[in-house]
Image (cartoon, rainbow, N blue to C red; front, side):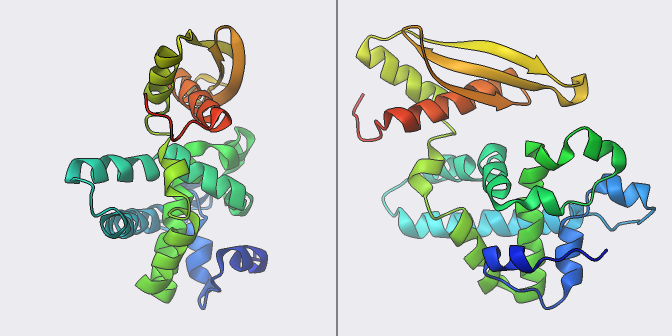
Amino acid sequence: MNKDYSELEEILGYHFKDKKHIDTAFIHKSYANEMHMENSSYERYEFLGDAILEYVTSKELFLKYPEKSEGELTKLRASLVCEYTLSQITKELGFGEYLYLSHGEELTGGMNRPSILCDLFESVLGAIFLDGGMEEAEKYVNKFLLNDIENKSTFFDAKSTLQEYAQAEGLKLDYKLVSMHGPEHNRVYECIARLNGETMASGTGQTKKMAEQVAAHKTIIKLNFEDKDF
């Protein structure tokens, strides 16, 4: 394995002292199995990164929102660390291009699969912690996840928020499935959100519900009604 991570390190703002950590963070289990590399996939790093992510996110939300209750903080944290949010971040950062995948996984689009891209956010976090400690790990989470909390957090309740808006404005909200493709184990759905029959936004996901959620979230951003009281 001899990938050049220099461009990625510039984006991350962190340069690895031991490249073994960043290498491991991108080894999918399918590749490890194909190459007979026992216990060499990113799964252990992901396990560690998941725990660090919960700690850092909890601490930052606790400090940033002293007025919020435990229940509100839990809900906000869940909206930030969900698969969609984390996979969108790593997709924009190009993490998929560094993945080590088996031939079969590569052919079925593994480098763009939301569940894998979500894993990579946590595995890279684990790698940064192991290589540079907690301070660098916190910088990573703050820089890429906690830099726009209000906007990212709208995804979790996007469908119900949009429904409330539609009812308050006397509009009819509905979702339409426009396409479905891919094998059964890796199906991709595309749905559109409509208000009074007008298409507002489209979304894709590995379930119909996820595709609708993405479409709703994009519609909320498009309408920009964050400050409306309804």
